[in-house]
Length: 148
Image (cartoon, rainbow, N blue to C red):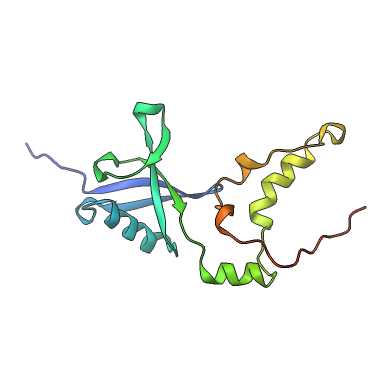
């Protein structure tokens, strides 16, 4: 009788709120969390610093920061949490060419689905949690489009 052990992890990676990817990584290459982060950065072409979160079964599959590689199982879902803004993104934000369309698309859809009589205040916090807005400085000038 021959016992065959699976030598790869197949992982579901949440790169952003609307970007999920399937990745297969060799178990032997993953000695610790830092080696997993390095492998994912290379495989998914993620630039900049990030940490990972995993779904913890002890807490009803809530995402928790990954600190132990033993918490990663085959078919796990991991979430990428970006820690830094790339210089190119920062430069484009400051010169006004940064494109927030993708980030604000779901917010716009939500806002348009709300009855205008009841839309005095709209909370968008839950729609923007995939982008770390606190670390991006405000641009020097705002261009407000005319509506109507």
